[in-house]
Length: 130
Image (cartoon, rainbow, N blue to C red):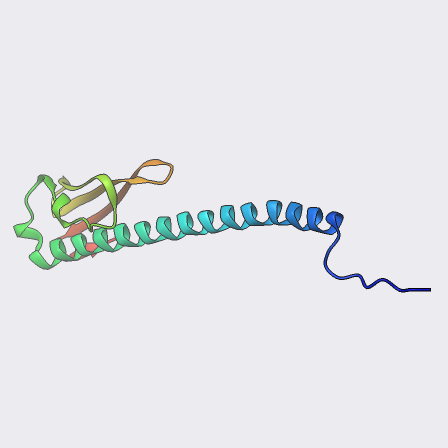
């Protein structure tokens, strides 16, 4: 009896391997795309939060008496990493004597559309409250 050497893969094995790769590769691609989108969203939120905190610190450092009421644009301070269209402004009102309410509004384009964030804080003659 003569034994035949079998080497290589059968057609069935090759078809199963191709089918598995056809399912696994797209799943990895979708997963990587989702991780990239989440990473970009987290980066953008961190940038926006830092920018708003910096704006409050600038106003607090300037002092209560030097803060004018009104709406002021600071879109030029937005980082280039934020997608267009983007804008930033803050509004100062005085709801009661000795207190100024500062509202920071930042708007930018995100993966799923436009994102608008708003931060509010009070600045008094004695300092800042959150």
